[in-house]
Image (tube, rainbow, N blue to C red; front, side, top):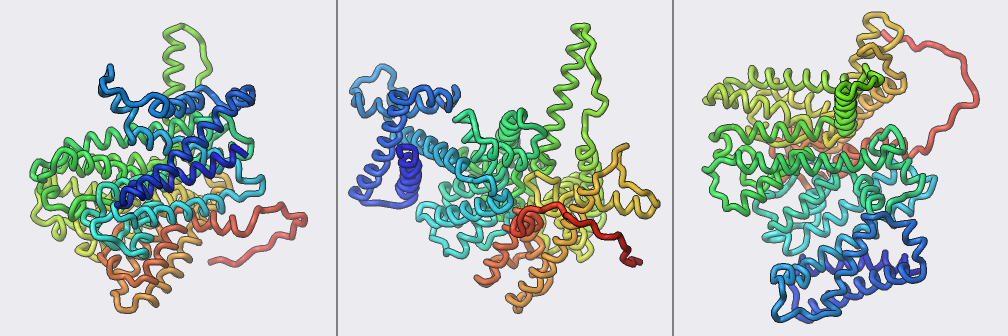
Length: 582
């Protein structure tokens, strides 16, 4: 009973703190909210003390060292209640931190999040479909994000429900389309909420849930671990938590380094204070790594001060975008390869004979890197040649190269725009739409059908043309299941694009068809590039694009497979026959 009361208290605590921070209140309202927060704190403490006194063995078995540290931090919140703030503290700054309301909110908010994550990981039954569970989790965070963005302190002049829903969906689905100007609509608190939604959407709700649950409790059910292994494609159960920790650690480090690079590459011609420059750097680093495409700068990356600068910021943004679009399994493969190399090197130094692994990089890593690089080079060269006398006219050679590289990277799902896509030549627009359709690598923050699928169908095409019985790459045979899934992904993407395009053309008859089709493709494949039609959409058109962004992020094929149920092996094998295909 105390466990369930803790879950209820966690929900009440988070809601109360959200209302406390997001609204302007009278003094009596503030007292009421603080009473709710204090009651939640008391519930946490009573539950923890009860387990320590009456169920100590089970507590020790269910908590690892980190979990116990979190509980110890919760016990520290008793200090301000038991010992009043001293008039002359020994260490003034430490006393300020301990007795600060901000510290109390951070501790209770973090503890509430951990309690909810652990409770959510205990809820799924053995028959829970991972695809449906992922879809529902995205829907929950989209709804919560909508409510959070509508808080008075999150916006400058308010925002409608449909626009808040659209922005929240675009953030959680890491798309970047927006019907409002982010720079003038949202306050720093609103930008912080937007950044959290982007981060959750990029890494996945299940990743965060499992991480906090496993990190602070030390154990999980077998079903939860199997579910998480499928989400992050871990090769074994033993490497599940290290892989999860590596992914989150890589994300934090990359975004931190990206923020530092963006801070120092921001031109001095942009008159921003130090806090605003820090906000710009952090927000754009998160948005770029997550391939979200949001910008809190007026005119975004097409700001004239950036275009006339030294172009360093575009190279930094391109590097961060590629780091997010290259896929987490490939990053894990890189880590394992470096570990194997280091082990071999230490073996030589210690004069120990070790087994040599001649296949440090698996076939998926090689295929993705080759395909990704080819598309990047073709996109950069193609953009330079096509737009040299159009949008790149009047720029220096270095500026043209920088803009070509940046505009070859961003259509892969980032959605930033340094030059307006509405000014592109028609042939350039077709090339950009192809890159938007392909996207980045599978299990990355990018969208699209993924370069893995494109490589699989190209390898299959090569095998058919050359008359080979098997599809091979890098002296490996590609599994037939991978080929079938790639063909299904491509087919479903074309069908979905056709259906959504028809529906949007019916709902938006007054808008040019070119803009509507581009907007639909950008939403469905979670890119975020726009020809300027997003603010002009009707409420029904915005809701339709919200569903397109959700399906594009979750994966229409995975969602359809989840709705149809688990597959069963056929008990009857029918005779084989041919379909005539020219």
